[in-house]
Image (cartoon, rainbow, N blue to C red; front, side, top):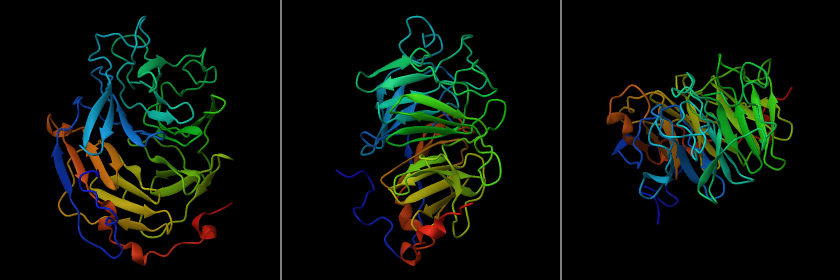
Length: 364
């Protein structure tokens, strides 16, 4: 069975330049709590998309996206409010609710890591701790130094540590988890990597500083993606495209054609299939073809949903958004979809000429 609106072999047909529009699907989630600034990590084991918490009201539920019903379905109930126990309370079995935190899958162990940081500290008065979700047992455990002595906990030195960082770019591949940038006392350029084979974290201080590097960043949406056809991580930041090679952890500037997306608050990027990246922010959607490195604006009929810091995800060539800030309930809970993005590019795929491998990147 195909998801709603999915056409076999039809989306993005060469030469098609029709206009698309955002469609309001209404409220479609088991947990309708407000949320913003959160990630929607994709599990490599089954290609499913997950959503953890994202609220300041203390809830910590875990949901999965049902692409057929277009509905967020509950996978693991957490606590329903601040009055309930959460890590690090004795006897707690679930993490606290997160705000501005990250969520990323370790594909080797098939576990979901989340940090439950609140930039203004928890209102319970006791510190929150990062946690790991284990699908095999449908349960959580806290991250501890006893299990992960290489984890960058607060108090281990430096002004920005992994358990307290928020709004970082996050991504994972079959071996590595990567987090870049984020904020605690200001935008950073730190890089954290986790090797799923030896179960060790490494912190690269100020890794993005200097000439030929992306610089400091704190982003609202995950702007870091794993691109299998490149064998690299891709970062979109400040209207520039960078790739990060996991064998050397070096940054490389990508050479693109056409006009990059306008800079706006909440700019993010999502992979469409294995060849395209949709960059969105404000009212614009722009697609980067990873074969031709051509930017193509998406033709929009009507206006985009009036929200900021929304939660974005993609499935079957469709781009979704919900929640965010600036709107009253229930408008901020409504899910909006832009279907078949590749069918609405201003530059048809038939006119895009592939670049040679040597022309795609600049080398020092």
